[in-house]
Image 1: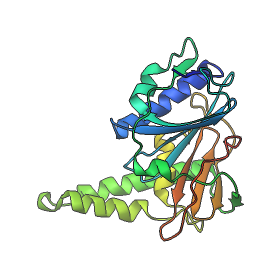
Image 2 (image 1 turned 90 degrees about the vertical axis):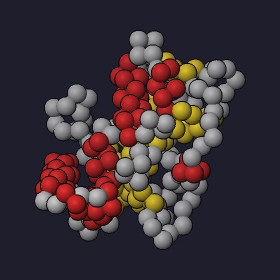
Image 3 (image 1 turned 60 degrees about the vertical axis):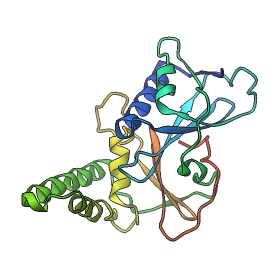
Image 4 (image 1 turned 180 degrees about the vertical axis):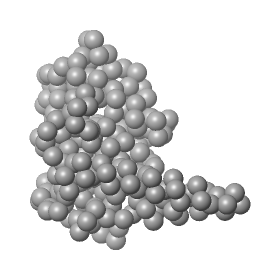
Length: 233
């Protein structure tokens, strides 16, 4: 079984937290692992947000058990979480599973360009808070007979499909980043000063923070299959 030697205890804790958040939204979640050398990318797709979440993980040394160059496998997020040993700073790669459709269509490795117009982190958090408050207020106003799943979904789609300024980035991408621990408020454990950045490559948009990325394939456009550049967080 392949053993991953994580860079430090903080890296192990962050990986475990990311997997836990994915499992909160989907108890049967799968993740795709791609890595070369001491860089590993963990891809997941929380169904509530319809986006692709990517956590870059630093390793202390390359993989063992015969995998000397690359790792590319889809596994159970729950089994991977169970294997994370924060004290030993290791994780074992579980047996491969049949990947969901999203695992075969990943963002391109290169060609990313910076996009302007992304608000400051505090403004992004305020935007999400306002959207959550609006959803709660509008659904609370519904009569009991009108509070159907279809109506709740309609209101949610309307709110979360709005874009962030002129960027074309749906608000749900920012909500996903916050919910997955990628967009942390100042003073939060592990928070960093680096501001989130927005990138595009072909059909894809990517919100990158110091803790991970959230990528979205825009509707009506083709998509490349590959993986994110592991050297870029």
